[in-house]
Image: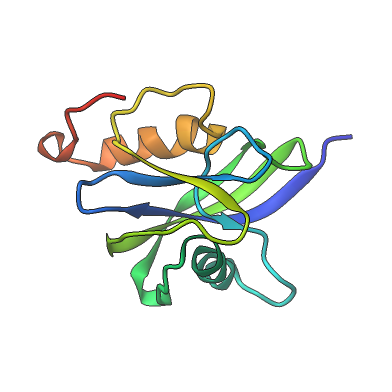
Length: 143
């Protein structure tokens, strides 16, 4: 039987327009900051708390906009599938690895999908953000 984990995830950008990805200790895939809700938390509250704990950003609920829902292959989870509520954080941010985060990596939107990106990023978020971005705003550097 397939197991599904429910999470909230946040797309965060720096001044160069690069997307923040994180790799948790003991895992191989980079994913968005975020995680599971505590009892009684909404998806937005879980997103804000997880971002604070993982990358030290104190965002407010009015800085979040809803990007969509992802149901697909889980990365770095004790489950087969992840059901994610995905938010976009307004503004440009700097982050630091905290708690269970082993590594931060900022990636341009035109980064090719590769084996170390979680499916949520590679199959959902990057294509969605590329559609929303104007061609002039896309970074030209490829990783």
